[in-house]
Image 1 (cartoon, rainbow, N blue to C red):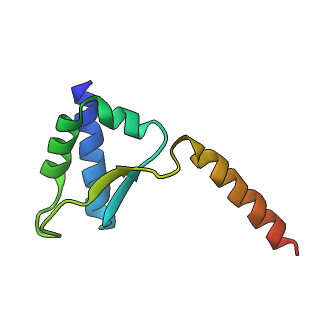
Image 2 (image 1 turned 90 degrees about the vertical axis):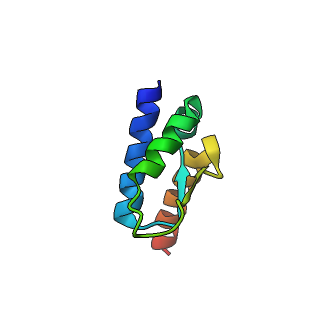
Length: 86
């Protein structure tokens, strides 16, 4: 799995470079995938960052809602629909 962790790290670095974010959150199965080979992911992530943008790498953390994120998203959609009709 190190090759997949390396690919995930490179992909995260590309998104950080393109979007210039201060924090990266991983949801769904991504935290599990990141935990398989964290050293390889971190090495690929840091190697892929553009150094001129910032001195340090933004932290990568698991999403706060974990497995409950889809439920929260559906709830938001329902409330948006209800509030839109009042």
